[in-house]
Length: 254
Image (cartoon, rainbow, N blue to C red):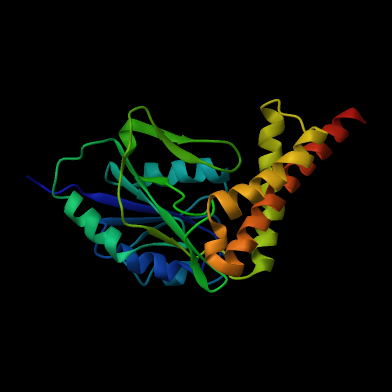
């Protein structure tokens, strides 16, 4: 029986500090690596061309649109979708290599994602295991979602791999806060479009609940100061999302 061939797809923009680790983890796992770049001005393209990748350029279509376009550019139907700040761990590479020799038992596979933050791996809070559908048959679904939180949707139940994606996301608190500014704005716009509205009860109850959930129920305290920080930042993220949603509401009333 022939092995299942995989196309790894990544979207990039100014990822020179992180992209090499991602690409190294895909060789020789994927038969093809597709990079779709949305206008990098740093060394991202030069680094990518050191590897056997197919490099494309596309003006930004939004996260969902960009990932859908990258998926469509692939030569193989089975896709491994990877962000530029992620890598495939060794255990996951071994697991996928064994899976490729078998007949796929599902249209998509969920993978746990572990994040490196403040000098350590976060093994609790809502950041772990953070299941992501990243290996899928593109014929069985499509990328869906709003301005943020895009995901590939399939109609049938997904199965799970045990090995982790390794996520090297924020190199500093400042980088997190910069992304929080961007993502909270996009998430608020998505919520507003869905008809959601911010009420005083949301500000009063949701941030404390998110902190308690992350730090106590999901045992963030076991990750030390980084776990406490993640719990606090998760609560702040909810607060800012609703604050920006409230701002949109006020703008419509003027």
